[in-house]
Length: 256
Image (cartoon, rainbow, N blue to C red; front, top):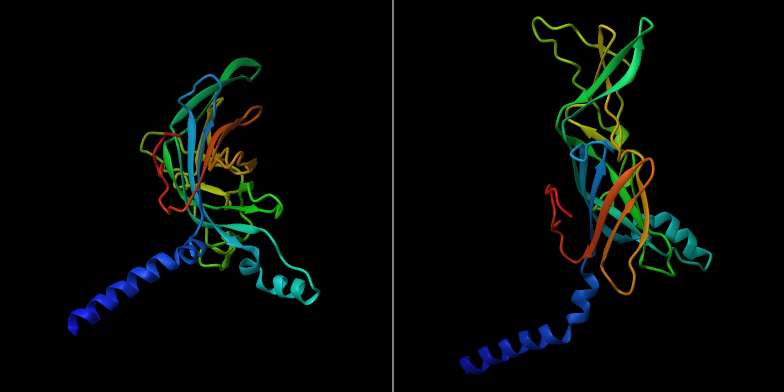
């Protein structure tokens, strides 16, 4: 009798496993893993920034429940999806270059430099805004409110931003701080960009190439990967992977 009962339980579990695969797939999440490499100096290809971002697809009805209810009350529906923020990181290489200037009416060079640094805070969001084409993707770095993976909205500007100023070394001239240091879409732990010219030294806030970067792309022919680059004022190479896996395959790795 015990043997029959055990066999029945096993058979029931196997039956449930095979009868409801579609339901499991329907509740599976879709992740978008973005890898970006920005070239900072056309004369030095080792001067770069890297960024890694993971987003997760959430229906707009869940991201905007009040708007969805309003649309439904008028007989409509809120379509499309928001790509909610899971995590992000960025890195920049050390770099130094000079610009030809004039100091006291004589030819001179201005030296500009920054140190290698990882990010402290990176903010990005995306969306599938065309309900008639779920392969059309929008992505960008932003300081506007972003949807988190827990379906709560977060305003990056609500978080205190503290920037460490220049550290004066004994025997060296002090660096003056110029301009404002404010929260950006990409914020490095070392936010300083150093200037030296005409006997003066000063620092400004380093502005990442990703701060105003936006991407509008499309997955073609059922493919789940996008690769491309932007040319012009900003040279950025990018890769987007759409997958059911939460793991970013290139996380903090300098590879595409």
